[in-house]
Length: 192
Image (cartoon, rainbow, N blue to C red):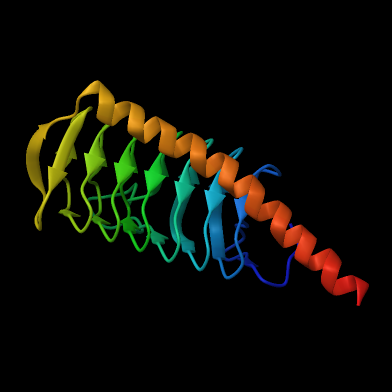
């Protein structure tokens, strides 16, 4: 990937690795040991900075506009540090802050939510908009948590789970549309 509207920056001998089917929107900054899987979409003006540990984003996941993803380095008593591991089919809402945590397959992070070091969001679980999942907290599968600090609210039903899955499919398709629009703009600009 070589686009002037996206920053890909190697650091400490590690470079971003982005699957060719991923959509990376203009304004994104992707730094260091970042792995982005197939059909992932990283939306406008996101920052993924893996300068002290690693960030992995699984297939079909999305990180929406203005979100920040970072990690934490190894420390005394914590030799592994806190990498950020995002599973497959994960939805991360606009302006979220994701830091040194694990989001399992099909997890959901609402708009403006914060997930801190060593926290874990289980599969098919949802962190509500504006919530803050504090360090080391674990959300079990199919749970909804909300508030600051976030607390368990209820179990998610099948309707909520299906809604999240539809959201994932929408973002894969929408990423393809945006990629085509950006390519079209590049071709139009070149033709003048």
